[in-house]
Image 1 (tube, rainbow, N blue to C red):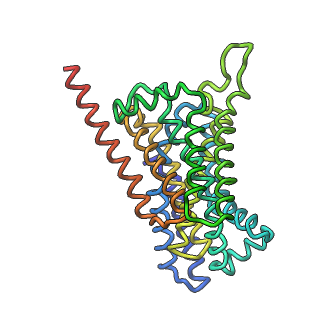
Image 2: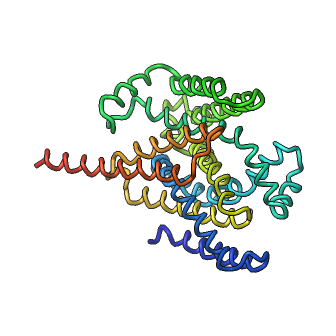
Image 3: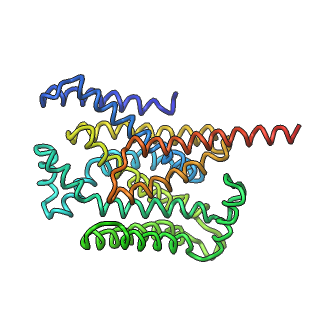
Length: 346
């Protein structure tokens, strides 16, 4: 339980603050605490696959950057992505000043929620394309020796020999979406611009390791490319931001109180970080070899759900269950794989 101690402390503080806020604004102590807990559980269920992918990256980072991710990264995740970034999006979309939007979020949460919902097209295109590239880059990775879906994955991985195939496929998906989705012309342009922005950001973050190459020494200061140092840190933070978009917007279906939303999602974000640490320290990914596969398929599903969500509403419950379903299937497959290896060794 030591990996979860800080999360439990932060959760207790958040629940106390939620109770105080509920007593002050007339919501009531018990309802405020209950809604905060519900939001925390929702965030964990939506982001469990995020924790697995985080762990797959974090385990290859040096200890210093692991600590940066687990300290500064937590503050960015809780306050930056769950509170300030949505306010920045509304500010950019409406032209209102940042502090005006902050006041709107506190005093007129219904209006703030509407503006945030109206911005969903750009949010979904941007975050969806970034997550889609996370999935495609995994699928087209030639270096993977173990394939969950056997020959199918082997053939897809072989296509990784084609330079930038993941980006090409992602752009084809984007062009098809902006052409065929039943939206107005303004939304088509938003989808295209925001989607290309997501692709560019993924390419930029994934290429940052090149800045740290020591050509004279013949090796990379960042031993595992994007998985080390500042490049890895930025990659994880952008990945977390992409996951947080749906959680923030979906939270307004539960409550319109921005502070309760932030406190609830903060609890979830803390437990996702603790779960990431637990997976790394216990070597869970090495023991359950298909867990990373399941998490990436869940990310691929989330990316498609975000993109489809531009037009069609998909319940957060469904999104969470799909993610959990892939993780459960991956755990079952991993156990079968271990038993098969054990029987062969015997």
